[in-house]
Length: 434
Image 1 (tube, rainbow, N blue to C red):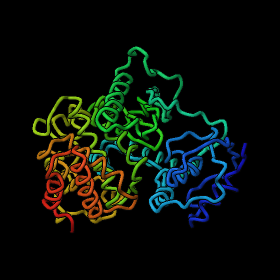
Image 2: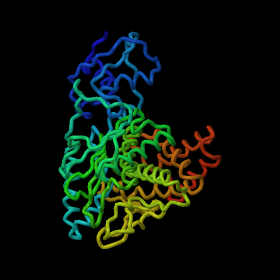
Image 3: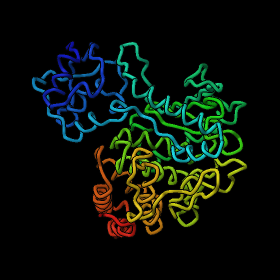
Image 4: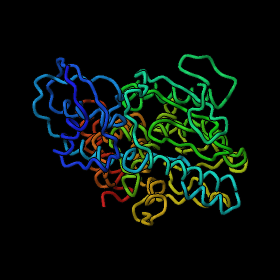
């Protein structure tokens, strides 16, 4: 048996790789016990293996369990540049995970139009975001690990501003409840999980069977839904402008897709990397919705968020991947600000540098690609490319990476010949690369 502490082992690995521990905000006080057993001697796997307890949200492994460390380990392997970047820039630890479905500019416009619930929702979202920034990961030995079986657990917040209010209202395998929001969250999360497994061969959000925790009836007439790095949370809306967020597969798929990005490229949520983060969620959201409805690229409407629109906005949507900038235009929400080409790129400070705004540009490129080779093939290229990106990737980097991903998949016969040229042409049509 080998007993080691984070200070004596993991801190050494991180310091040897010039990583400032203060950036991670971790409490390095936990003893982890590792059994001296045989382990694969693949250097890259070992480097990831050794920092798992430091960053379980990256690795997908729960904290507070035993890890096997090979006897022959006398020096510690060097972390790759990508691994260092993921530790340094991972949003959950650097700035707090909070990805809301309704963009800040939309809530601001509603608030200016006199919609009190929008102002309260914006304030609640900001409070939650601040709470996440202050949160220090708890790696205590008493931490409850996930099952690793991607089970669904749905909680009823009972209109409190709290998550995981006991008891669990519906868990994996349980019969339907008497609550539509509970059952819709459960069913939609199951569709997302099944798509990931069947189409992308991915085992839940983290690819290690992460459980899907869902909270419904959050707050009072809360006009949003969000992924915060651990779980999904849905408001009910006010019933006039927005309705039950858990009932729209677009919303559930989009927000859970933020988790996929979190556990792969960990794209920073600001400027172009943040716009890519949002775009990847729209890509997977629409791909999953089309998959569930049996649609093709030519059948789909390519609108995001249409089913959360209440009576006063019925027929509108939040985003259009086919024609960014046309999803809505009304006195309540204002006009859709998304550009579809780099010539109209938003360079201002609002919305974290336009993460929900400039995502229209890569969204349009995905739409053009899907119309040529099909949504399922295009989504596979985007998913493959996502795994090759680093946290600070910009639009030009994403273009090159997605073309590279297309070439790889052409070689393996998973997408048709000419797909790399299709991706390149789609981005050229939106002014990329610059």
